[in-house]
Amino acid sequence: SVTYSSTRGGQTNLDFRTVVMTGLAHDRGLFVPDTMPTVTVQELEEWKDLGYSDLAVNVIRKFVKDDQVPLAKLQDIVKRSCDAFRHEEVTPVVKVGDHYIMELFHGPTFAFKDVALQMLGNFFEYFLDTGSNGGRLAVLGATSGDTGSAAIYGLRGKHGVDCIILFPNGRVSEIQERQMTTVTDSNIHCVAVDGTFDDCQDIVKASFNNQEFRSKVHLGAVNSINWCRVLAQTTYYFWSYLQLKKANLSIDTVNYSVPTGNFGDILAGYYAKQMGLPVGKLVVATNENDILHRFFQDGKYHRYNIQHTISPSMDICVSSNFERYLYEVAGRDPVKLAKWMNDFEQTKKLTLVGEELKRAQTDFASARADTDATLAVIKEYNDKYGYVLCPHSAVGVAAIEQLNMQNGETVCLATAHYDKFPAAVSRAVDPLPTPPPELASLALLETRRTCLPNDTKAVQDFVEQVIADRLAKEKKRATVKKVVLTTVLAGVVAVVVQAVFKKRSSS
Image (cartoon, rainbow, N blue to C red; front, side):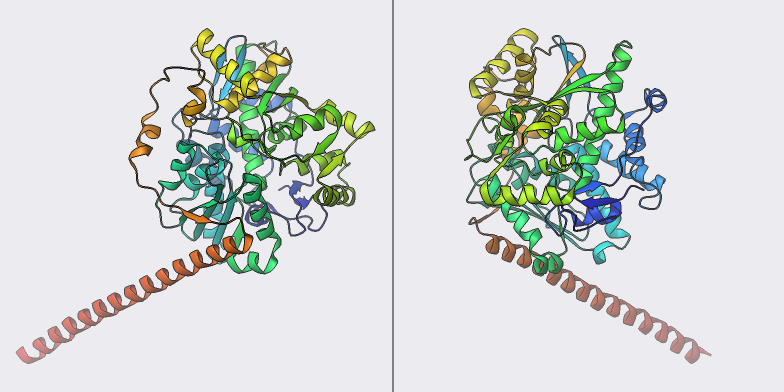
């Protein structure tokens, strides 16, 4: 199997199981593959008629061999993950106008993150059942809207897992919040933090960097800092390429426009290209929170204050996955990368020039769409094609319009269902189509959440209390079970003794 090392050099040559269960490296870096497996033209030809599940197994198998996950178990994990989707193709590709849209919203929570988080939840379950962490894991995640519910649906009811999701209070859509807070499984805990998504993300990172706390609670990650998330997302780039290739054999490469906040989704496309998938342009599409667009335009990765937009899942000041790409730009030099990141953490600025910037601009194109442009695209696609885009997906479409890439070789990633953002979409589409029953019913369900201040210690204390309460309940159940078994056993013994006594008396 492929091994992994931290972008900052503090941990090297770790196996897949370890990096999945560890999440963030101990030196605050992110895990990246030490080598990139390749996919040949012949293999792509052999895979062209596979269903999504079988294709995904073949892609993941490039990284994960029997020494980490036996093939039969990998097939089971991927199949069960795909079975959670409402569409048989999992991520269908449809032609809209002159280009294609890949619909990534057919999973349990109607967002692209279901693809990765269904798989991650099942990998967690397998690794815990086979000895990792003593069977215990406390997942602490931050969400700007979609990661939280996808993580919750991927982890609800998983034995040995406590799932604590932080979200910025009042800064996710009502439906996004209800998708999280209406899940009342005992291992799920939603925390509304008085701050922004970046504040939530900073609390998660600080908790991972606290080695005592991390070890005490067996901390795990579901955010896209977890390598498994990125690996799982590479699968739909292979899927969509093969669908377009079947529709038009003359296609040489496929371009992708990706609504981008934390850089994980488009990074998966970059890695797929490095593996050998014939990818043309990768377009980073941002809203007003455009730190990535500014970087690819002039090399300035400078943190500004957050702006609240109609595409809240992209309202992110610092893209946590971008470090993985910067590691490549740094020539995979962990010392150089660590200096860049340490300087950025101190100054909130990183500027690249010369060959390093030229390489970045070769790897990615970028565009920015503000609220007016986003609403205009939503209205245009509804009026022209009867196709309703969510605000995030519309940013991706706006990007290809700006770059004049509306053609049969371009795929825009539709990252969420429009009905997750009715207040925003209704500004361009009136009336809205009837929402799916799964989303409409959320308004009728009870909710459960905890409100906490923007304070790392307060969150860590909450996590410890959650675990302590669960362990106490498990101990109580075990005691009750023991008493019941003892009582039953005593009753059985009494019956047997009585029967023996009667038999002897009668003889």
